[in-house]
Length: 91
Image (tube, helix red, strand yellow):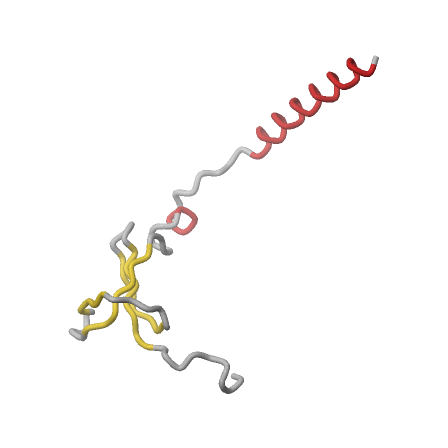
C-alpha cells in the first residue's frame, strides 16, 4: 500500500442491519454516537444500516425477475403507434 493515503482512524465497528436484525463486526472509519456490546463482551461503536447481504433480495433469493421481454414488446407497440400516427399526419 502507498504510505499516507489511507485514514489512520480505522477501528472496530458493529454494523446492525435493521431490516434483518443481523449484525457484524468489522473495521471502519464511520462516525457514530451509539455503542453496543459485542459477543466478546467488549463495547464497540454501533452503526445502523438499512440493508445488508442478509436482507437484500438478491442475496436472500427473494429477488423478483422482471419480464424484460414483455416490457420490450410494450415499448415496440407504443413506438409503432407513434410512427403510424406520424405517417398519418404527414399524408
